[in-house]
Length: 204
Image (tube, rainbow, N blue to C red; front, side, top):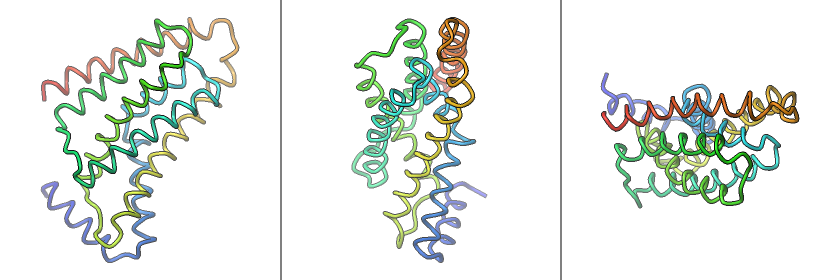
């Protein structure tokens, strides 16, 4: 079955539901777009966490990212902007590589990172919109479904942050070897993965 036809069937079934039920479906879709399906977004959020693993710094970054991607997600879904996927997807990969390299060479969190994360969040929002656009939104629950999809994304990001905190930062963040043995090796690995994605997406 072709993707457009499948999306049409999904939306048609959702339009038979109440707004509340449809909203819950899109909440789950948004969450699943991060966990377990959004490996690129998982790595981006993990990169934000690694350099300064306290909850407060990463939540500031996550807030900037959330505001930014919410704006472009809405603008794209409402067709105010129409970013080409062939540009958006490679830039998302480049954003992951940039933040990973910053983790390697900067050594500490800078104030300017909030602005960088915001700019990259605008691009990621276009990517989220592309994924949502493949399924579509029910006409009778358009806005609530969009809001709930975005809420699902936020819950997914929060899950990553909390998992990283309790599995990694709580035990190792204050160790003298944290940067050398954890941040740098993980960031190098993420840089290589993101670099591969960049080339792959440019060639598609």
